[in-house]
Length: 355
Image (cartoon, rainbow, N blue to C red; front, side, top):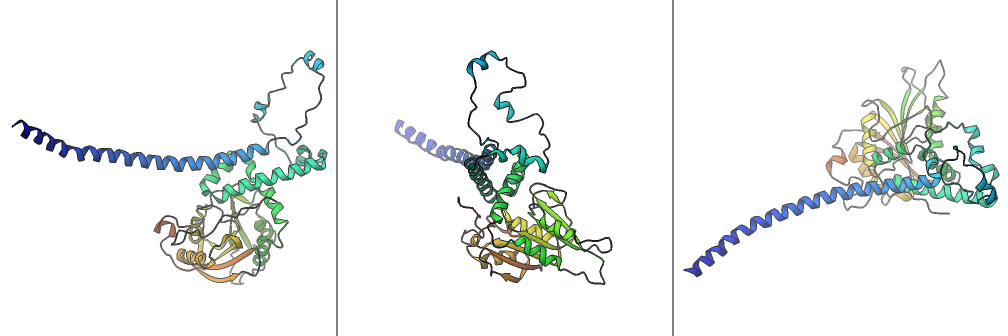
């Protein structure tokens, strides 16, 4: 009889064991999910910290030579209240407004030696490359937040970008300015050509086309969007969701601006704001395409039809497409919509090498 009791007790414990194991596995699964979410947040914060580090470097003075000071005189002089410690100067109470005409004088470039000027150029190039990498490897909402926290990011980036453009044999923006300016409105219509420039930079397209408008003929209406607003032409926003009504634009332009990892959402937004039969124009760097045909297939899946592809330029590929029908958005069909069926990216980041 005692042996029977031992056996029965063992059977009872065996029936309880799976319940304990189930509870343990549930806790582990919950912990794994929390860790996964925390990992994504950490990754986003890491990208944010890297870009902020690049910006903090941009505030470092180039002239690191310390002036000679008479130690005896320094000891005898009283400390003035206006001489604040360096740490407090990093975040001034109010940022003075600096006009373009005096920006160069205040930067001190006029007094730099050849070596210092070379160091400045190298430092500027490094900052540009770091910011550029972050913009290509993060989502647009993270980029918007960073530009809000550090508004000078826009100026630092575009200063480096202009230096790169000078090395190009041609600039896609110039092509779009020329081709769009040739537009002639039908005599039966009084509506201007409505254009959305997505990721417009300093709004070169808007400046060029709006200057062609006259009091007698309003030929162009250009809406320019980017992460920051450097002038009156640009609206600062996330280009995956721009402040335009559905089916109101004749042309949407992406000139080297499919930068975020969620670029598919940019293209879906273009479909939303374009009129039926509206034109989508894309210019991108050749090296970004592992397979051009798969990129075009993704555009077809969104609801566009390719009408022209120009790969004659060694650096850029130009795509002309029209809006056709209304498919299910790719970003809602499956995760990783920026990749093909094998998990390979449709577009790779455009990263500049150190020269």
